[in-house]
Length: 208
Image (cartoon, rainbow, N blue to C red):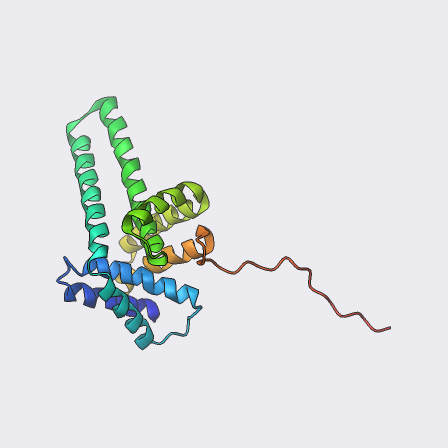
């Protein structure tokens, strides 16, 4: 239910910002909402609490989120355009090599975009600081990066097979799963699942 509420909040707040201004603050607010949800262990949040948390975060993201989101979108669009041009215009080994390199760069940009919003939501730092930290995390947390990559591929496949999931849960579901992966595998200070105790439990002695 909370995932549905966050998806509805993303749609409503995106239209409140006329999409161009409202979409990336909605993305940032969704990441921030799930970050609070995991940190507070709040699976019993009501729809009202979820909506209020989202709306509060969205209002604070109207400027900064767009300064991060639109450059990422522009970079991705340019890479996709260049990849299409290379695929149709350049033949032979050089075209294949360049196309392969562009595909790798585009894939890395997608991973970066998935992770940077979590880092940015967790730390009270600039977007530039979050970007540098994200690059370091992608390299230093290979298992986390691998799981994000797998999640991205599964999400695209799932949306293509069951479009209804995209309609009902939208971006809220993958954002939730990205945040969960970082929570369990990212190793961010102050944002991680509790580790099991290594202390050997004491069992009561049996009476003779």
